[in-house]
Length: 101
Image (cartoon, rainbow, N blue to C red; front, side, top):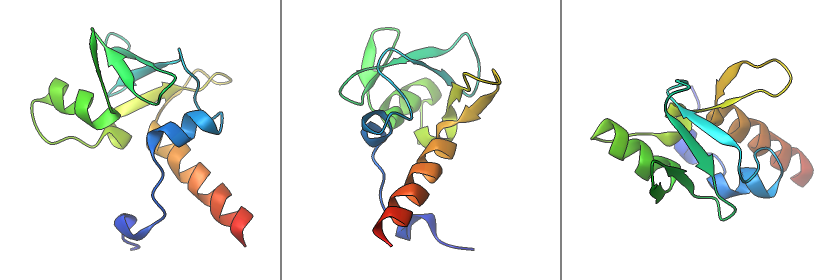
């Protein structure tokens, strides 16, 4: 199994820059609609007045170590299904690698 830590780093803000997510769009903690954060233009998120990275805000909600890529979900605009934002990160990573080949 490939080690994900060895792959090209994709900061959360890059998903916004590349249009995979947009400022003002909602993210849902663990896919729960009652735990909604908003994406900010600078690549941070805001949940109940707390502003920070996807990892910082997730860590606050879980009171411990947290991987925001796996814990924050977006809602697919076409199907309405919830998916972890890591899905978008993997798609962008592949797209950027394909462009460099």
